[in-house]
Length: 131
Image 1 (cartoon, rainbow, N blue to C red):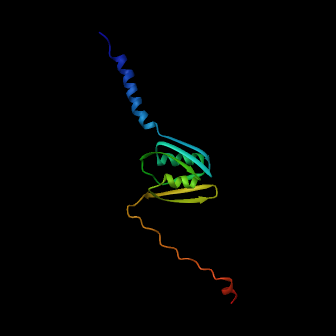
Image 2: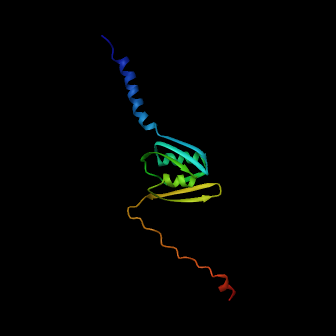
Image 3: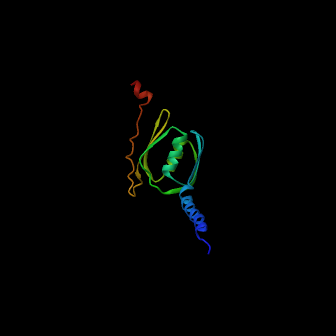
C-alpha cells in the first residue's frame, strides 16, 4: 500500500505559498530626485506608496489611509506625485526645509465645500500715493 503522506506535504506547501503570493506581490518602485520623481506601483496601498516615498525622500506622513490597492505610474515633482497618490483624500501638505509633512485627514466627502473666495488686494497706483 502506498503512503499519501509524501505527496500531500509538498502539495500543502504549494497551496500555502500560493495564498501568500497574492498578498506579497505588491510592488512600489521609486526613482529620481525631488524635482523629478517616477513612482511605479502594482497592487500597492496608499500607505505602502507613502512609506516607499518616505524611505527615499524626507517625507513624513500622519494618518491612516484606506487599504485599497492600486496599480499606476506617477511622474513629476515630489509634491505633485504625493497629491496624485492622495487623490480622493482630504489632506494637507506642509513644505519644511528638508522635505514634506503630509497629514491625511479623511477620505473625500461627497459634499465638498469650496473655500471662501479671497478678496482681491488693490494696490494704490503711484499717482494715488503721491497725492
